[in-house]
Length: 185
Image (cartoon, rainbow, N blue to C red; front, side, top):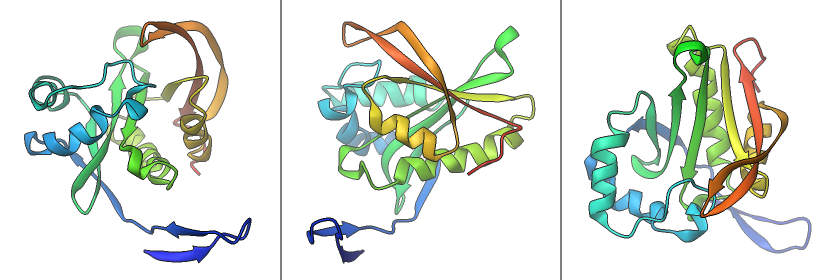
């Protein structure tokens, strides 16, 4: 970890050069999972409600996350700080998959999710050769997540009006995509 002077105002800020890894989620990740899943600042953009117990986390990890076709934890030093997933389409939609991610608030604005998205984008089309389109849908007021996708090379396609209900409110969402034929950032 190195400290640098912020040129804009002379304030000190910490720049962390953290190596991140992706690995399958495990039941032993439940305590780390609760750090972000129980945080309203993190879950306000998620379709799911804020978790209130470790039992909820263990149930989700065992019954949803572990059996998921492609879900990994984002790690620093093998400690889970978030998740990233690719959910494949089926039938007529089998040419596309949806990207999703969540990260502990402590690690926001450090480029970690952008790096994780780039890691996934650089491998998923080889892992799933039938996949032609990786897409992500983001709430219009989630500007940080929109920047992540743009930095990772995704194209903003447009706004989906009144597309989903998040925390009881119907929200407009922005569609982003990356095609297997796109050049990766």
